[in-house]
Image (cartoon, rainbow, N blue to C red; front, side, top):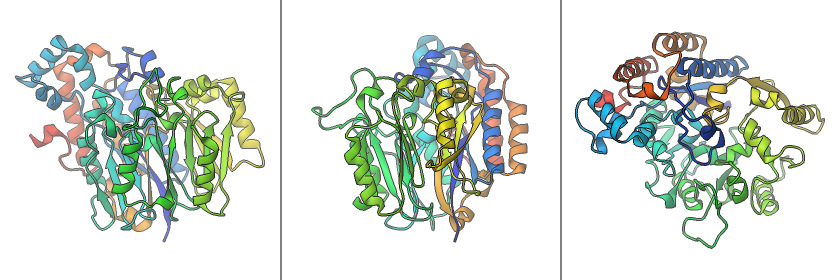
Length: 447
């Protein structure tokens, strides 16, 4: 049996915009209210997906959420026709209106936490959508994310789906952005690393002071229980509160792992040495590479500005472990120099860097790692998943034509109140669910 790590990238939605809603996310705040290009953003994302597919990687596509979220506005007391709801919300509660128009579901790393069958007690792949309670605009996502994931992985023989954790800050869960997995091979039992920002029930423990810690220890522990993980294959690590206060809002902005490699900044965690020792002990005697980036090599500011760690770390079929990096890393002399030294070092397991232009995503606060959800699957599990969500030449061409047909070239924040945009978006998403054979996953399809 063969085993793979499949990257399911989030498809950018037709209302992609820069609302600047994410307090604690420096890039998101810096580009608030700028004019966006939904068409360009979606095509950039598809180009990256196709490039990884062409490298021999298993690549999938995850559908976007519907925005504006009319269903959420009706729950908040805005009544009338859809056009009237849009007008009233935009006029009477502009901050709420901007929130229900958020484009943040494109960052699929926040969609869910996934545990492969090799790690779980019942031998199934487990999915738990993230509740994303720290931000109102993101807390609107888990129900639809759950429906989409169930439509993608709809065979009960191989897959098990859980309801998202309780919608309370004590169980704040940000999904795979604060979770990574180390293993010898993708099909072997691995070590699942859960990185949290604070203790929900113990205020005496360290916590950030400026920006919020979005993931709690208690949420991570709950996910591990739901997924049937054991003490022997689970490690909980606290993210350094000081780096959260410098704009490192998720662990995947300061660390990334793949197979037997953990690539991290020296300021990423608290109690680093003891936690690395725990990882090594549970990993066993097999080779394990801890690649520490010192502050003198790359500052926290450079790491945040370029998203050096919000890169994809992948192993293509040729076995040459590769970093998929945004062009911002290439344009920063310090970061580019570090990556050149890293890949040229004889001791480094990382041998290549491939740069991609994902500026539409970067300006909204997410790099290549934010755009994908990693799902380790064996060949039987891949065959049991929805084949219409896996990248191919045919799907790539069809989705490009779909984007060209339905997406606007430019979108200003004020355009979001346009009823015509809502209809354009719904028409596009309805067609997308037919292309990807998802069924009725959106509220407007179910009403």
